[in-house]
Image (cartoon, rainbow, N blue to C red; front, top):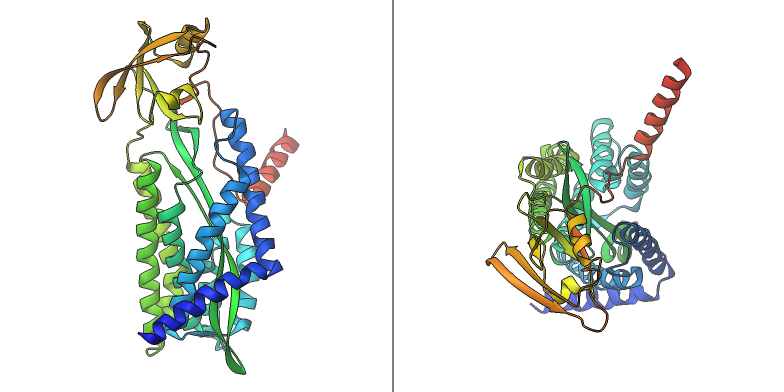
Length: 383
């Protein structure tokens, strides 16, 4: 027990010490730039920001430090050692693979490929330690997705099966400083700083439920890979199995998540009964009225509401008082009232499922964008 407490203390102290490293703050700056990019997109979609890049960065910083401490405890308790030369091969390969698709920057793919090459051609590569590191990083990532994945969600409209559906886009990043033993002539502990990211869409479930499902699938993959890496230390055949499972298991995890999303029913589709609420803006009339995601606006001041245009027409004259009939998914048919005799009510601050919104498309990988440009040029040349 005393050893465990010492490891926890050492992990906490060293994790906090990374705040003194310039490299750590460079990683934090990269995260800030990512959130600033997301903030611009959020402003284009909503007309204002729900949260700000600096706030999101600070939240990610706190959770990243917690995740780093948990990862450090797992690494130090296991006593696993790594050879830096192994990761000098994994990192550049991961960057090259990311040009094919952004998800391939994950070490599961590069780590699996490097490990298989080492096994087949007899290179001196510690497959067990590479797989163990990948397993722990994904286990920490699943924890971070569970506790922080739903924050900073952005309501979006996408086209699916020929119709416009609403949903949420989730993007989170975390700086992850962790301690691990390095075997380089002699064994000593070092602090490594990683950057973890999570990107997902919630179209068939609420963001809170989607992050729980994603975290569950990822943790299952992580634990399986950790078990395989431990077995590979004693049984050579498991080195092959672990090296194959890292990329294939990760792809299977993604495929299962996508299949559930595609087979599920889109819950943020337009309703024939009224106007469906996707989200409410902060400090808005909708927030003051406690309108929630999934509510359906049926009427305002006796006027039936079927579209965004119907709602805007009722509010055009800035009424001082509104009475709304709403279908609440939990309470059923309810009535809510709001008044503003000083300024009148011009905007409810709602994001609704409507065909007139900005449609968001899934990002393409750099290689795929280049390939599409090449094909388009070829077609134009033939014409």
